Length: 514
Image (cartoon, rainbow, N blue to C red; front, side, top):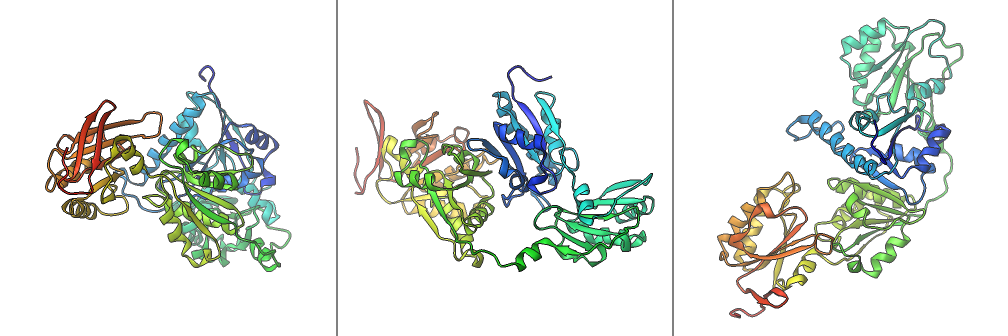
């Protein structure tokens, strides 16, 4: 039973790929929804969103749900299944926030929402609390059959739908026992699928359809397929009745590529920094770039800080896919879009500028212009709240060991501390990474007095801003989270009391005391 005044969850079937195969009802609901949610792999390019794009409207909230893994390995303690289950729980929680606030949510699903779709995992986690309705879509089986142009089953023949992930022996048995078959989930499973077709004596009667109904559709005899070039969105069909007309191999993408194409003038990528939180800290230069962009790309939290603009597309993702996000932005610009990649603070400080420039060095993006617009750093914002703790030489260090080993972090902390420089510490802790703050404190105490001033700035410029001055010896890791920035003083850093609170400065002259 739904709660009073809550929103409604719509499971929207988009069909197999052609936007014109989206049903009238699905198109209407996509346009009307307050929130449009869709999945993608870590590269950030969502097939579902691409199908639905003609029906989106300006001002809609987009929830981009990025799988932490697809076929790759993971270091999650629960393995692949543990990582996926945790992702579905977190994704459902994100959608529940909108539903509880009374917003309607259209969760997009390629094909049909209840046919090998991710939608069912959200339905299980939300339909007991919120009203939910499913809008069916044309399945890939129907689209692939249409691509062949021949009946799949007739009369009393039986159609069996099989996942390609089944063991070869079981797949073989089921192929022998059915009149017609559709084999889904190909990709890297195709060698086993072809072996099963051969062992069952069905290979000569089987056909391969890739990306049915899309502009990249391919139709081949199953025996002629290159095993190394099979995507997940492909299907093998074994029709029940013998085809009465020839089934010709064809490749829409190759045909389109052979035709002369209009040259595309690349757009550009502008990597911008919004500043730490307060809109007054976003520069006019950045504000203008955001207004001119056709597309925004960035971490969901930062994208949400940018006011929605009519006609502007928003591509939000989680904070662990920097390279994929950069590639997506550059690919959009390569096709003519003006893309703003959004960072908090300054984009060149532990943010997206380095990731975008690194990917832009690839030959395929050689013609895409990239600009970086600076922003006020979190370190400078926190420092300003207490005075000038970064008034002399200082270093910026991230405690995150996601992209570099902790040994490197510890070596850099020790070297900077030995050089008697103040330190601005970014990314000190997260919900799953708690021990580094204590380890950092121990490294620094080998070089700094316990009385060394430490500034804890949390959500500076935001609605829950908090700034405190303590000593290094008092630093409690439990008081630090991902939204906190630390400034560790040097031997010349002093703190003193005023009527306005504690003030801190680092003198540029050694021997200065208060």
